[in-house]
Image (tube, rainbow, N blue to C red):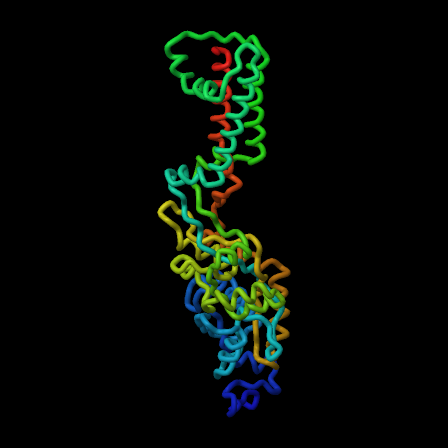
Length: 398
C-alpha cells in the first residue's frame, strides 16, 4: 500500500499524512453531493448543476481525478450527514455543507437565500366574494349609517316652518317617493336652504366615511381574489401552521423564545419539500434557487403557482466545499474557486442554467380579502349618492 495513504482500523476512513499535490493527483477522489437542483443534478447528467460544474472546472484545472456520488438529503442533521459520509472509505469532498471545526472547508463560491415556503391561498369564487363583502362589520356600519341618515332626515323635515312633520309622516314620505314620482310629473325648483342641506349633508358624510374606511371594492371585483394569505412568519404562527424544518435552520432562531416554543409544538419533521407544502399544507424553509426551479412543477390549471415564498429570508446559505481534515487539496482548491468567482466563471455557469430552464419567480401578487377592504365598500358610496338624490327630489316635491 502506498505510504501516502493508510486506513484507520478504528474509523475506516482515509487519513492524510505526508501527501503532497503530486500524490493527490494519483488518486481518484470521491466528490459527494446531495440532490438540490439547479445547483446539483446527477453525476452522469449532461448538465450536472451549477455547483458541480464549478467544482468540475476547478478540479480539472488542478488535474485531479474525481468521481461524483449523489445522495438524497432527507432527515439528517448537517453535521451528522458529514460524519456519516466521511466515515466511509475513499470519501474526500462534500459539496454544499456548512463549515465545521472538524473538517477543512473552502471559501463560499455560491450563495442562495432560504425562505419560508407556504401554500398559495385558495381563490375565492366571485359569488362567494360578493356574499363575503357584507361581513358583520359592514352590516354594523351600514345599519348605524342608516340610523344616522334617518335621524338627519327627520330633524331637517321637522324643523320646517311651513309644516312640522312627525316621525311617522316623515317615514311614510320615504315609502311613497317612487309611487309619487311615477304617478305625477315633478320639477326641480330649489327654493329653500333645507333642500340643499339634505343633499350636501348626506353626500359629504358618505364621502368622509368612504375615505375613512379606504374602500377598495372595485379593485377586488377585477382579477383573481384570494382567501386571507400568510405573508410573514408572524402570520404563520398566528394561523398555527405546522412546519417541517431541518435541525440546521433551528440555529437561526436561537434566542427567539417565541419561535422555539412554536417549533416545539408545531414542528412535525425535518423534511423540506414543496410536495409537503402542497399536499399537507405545511410550511418549510427552502433555498431560493431550488424554489425558483422546482415550483414550476406545482402549478394549477391556469399556470398559477400552488406555493409561494414569504418576503423576508430566513437565512443566507453559502455553497462551500468540505474536505477531510488535513487534506492537502484544501488550499489549492480554495484558491482555484476564488479565481473562478473573481473572473466571472461562476456567474457564467449560473447564467447558463437560467437559460437552460426558465428560472423566474411567477408568484402572483396575492390580493387578500381583509377587513381593510370590506368595512365600507364602494356599494355604500353609490347608495349614499342615490339616497342623497332621492332625498333632494323628495324635499323638492314636498
